[in-house]
Image (cartoon, rainbow, N blue to C red; front, side, top):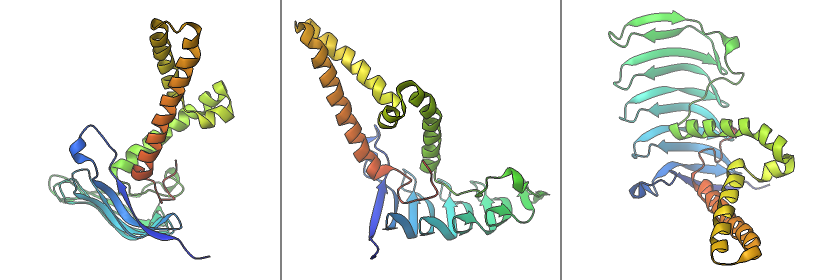
Length: 238
């Protein structure tokens, strides 16, 4: 089957700082919905944050991450989405922080830590590979880190929420959506009652609250389509 390939720009999330709207967060190519080839990522300020290449949605080859002041933060290689080979980390002022060595996401040699004051070698230690994640560490942007925390919080809420309302409803309706619908329904019901709608205030409030919630969810889905940092990255699990 022919591959579907197109360029994709992911934008920074909208905020109250309207003068920052439309700024790019990431740009690269998607092949069959997965990141492929060179990709670049930026801070909200426009400073380059991270750069490297993907293959089938996984990081590969040389990757570099920068601090907000433009100096290097981390640099090393990936192999099929896992850190592989020598890696170097720097402090924001450009001084060496540490050097580490990896093989398929596992430490393969001692990690060297440098003294932030003198710049000389401070210590060497061999990380316990058994205490590390099975697929190793990853290099993520600040937006990806916030996204992963948000998804982790949602997963923690999913089980008790589905136990309360049932799995089918729980998969379709998130807790904040249900809470918003109840609040809006009470507000609209009170408004219609004050205008003398009588018993019709109940279905009117129910319907208007549902329509507002549906419209809001639709708008948020459009927003996510253009701003979700995990678009095309198979290793960012939601």
